[in-house]
Length: 221
Picture: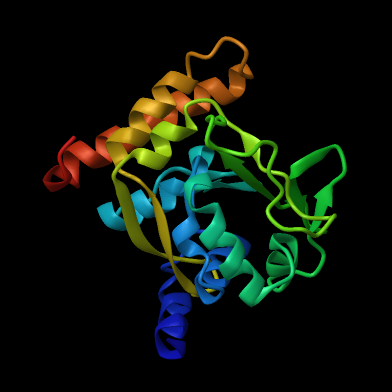
């Protein structure tokens, strides 16, 4: 690992923000990776790694990572989290101790550099408790419901090794590129969404659609 990280740095292989890769590595070390999918902009790094391309910085630039939590596995998640840390926030602070929950946005933690971690979930079903805090700790995440998040959680998964700017590596699990495309097309037409974000949603969908058709045709649609 050390040898390859040095090689990654020397060849400037990595494009993903260091903090994001460190968070994925922390989830893996804690045995929590199976309970989350990366959705949103950071999923692009898995697609570009698989396709052997680099997307334009205009569509990959972001200061937050969206983690979709699987509420169906909440009991197993709670047990696994207890074995590692007293709270999800505490687990995250092992990456950067400056992470704190935003007071009026309990599903988001932010560090001293302004990088945010958002934890979202599907819209509550009759089988789900709601609201949900990820642990008994008072300062932990309260997971926020997101429209159509169940489609992302039930979609075929897509996993790829990603590389940080500093050469570090981690496995990123997200949704099949075709699902990402469909979801981003929908978001780009949401009338209550910021117009600039809608435009970027459309650009991201276009970029992934090109990569899927031109570089990853074996994945199908």
